[in-house]
Image (cartoon, rainbow, N blue to C red; front, side, top):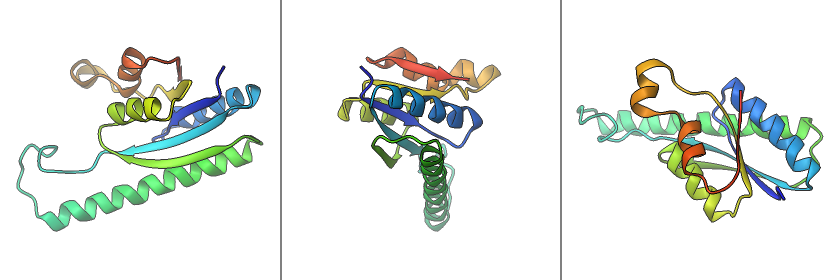
Length: 147
């Protein structure tokens, strides 16, 4: 039933709890994990056309990629430390988190998405919506949101 589980991680506590639950779920169904983190790079549109030096933007993007690598390393350590015996793959994606998660889930033919509930609060959530909310609304596969 759940042979391939996509687990987006962002370094938050709820993401680590989601990874733990996904490992258990995949273990019960002899499934595999696809663990991903999404980096939303800086660009002129994201900065609302605030003029910044190209070198500053490039440096910031490189720093974000390093953070992404560290998150995936921690995820790999957690999966290996949990005793999970199945296959696990790890990847970094660039772009809008909700869009990339949904695109990768479809492209990889994932059977489920397990993610943390890290959501925003107040006005930010009202206007932007959280990643977990968007995923639960638009995914065509089961979504487990872990608090």
